[in-house]
Length: 172
Image 1 (cartoon, rainbow, N blue to C red):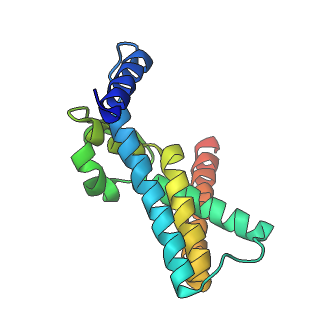
Image 2: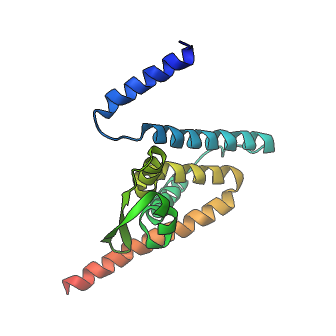
Image 3: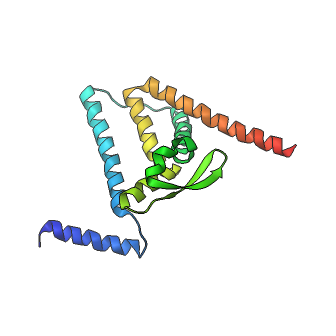
């Protein structure tokens, strides 16, 4: 038995123990983590090749701006009807979840489709990816990254004002 087959057998046993009879897409999660790690590695190498560096400091304003923008982008990507074509290969329509948001069920016909479906329907899960892209924007194109972030942050503020207005209308 080769070292590779010993490792593969060990990994399969550990995965079965972890799953505990449930269908958890560990292989799909591993693929998604590999894509993320590859993207971060690629961006880092590109930055070095181009001679760009991370900002000396990230201000509290940047953290707030990119945090609010990350919230809005992840809600847009994971819940908005207009972005459902992106999620459609990995989900099935489940109905309306709330104001301007859909509920979708993750497809489970393959581990990769299941893992990507979970990523694309979970704003908490997708936030790491979006935040990383904003971080890359700060390195490669800070002015553009701040403009895009400010646009999405403005939409998030508008959303909260819309909810507040609707609540105020309902109380009268």
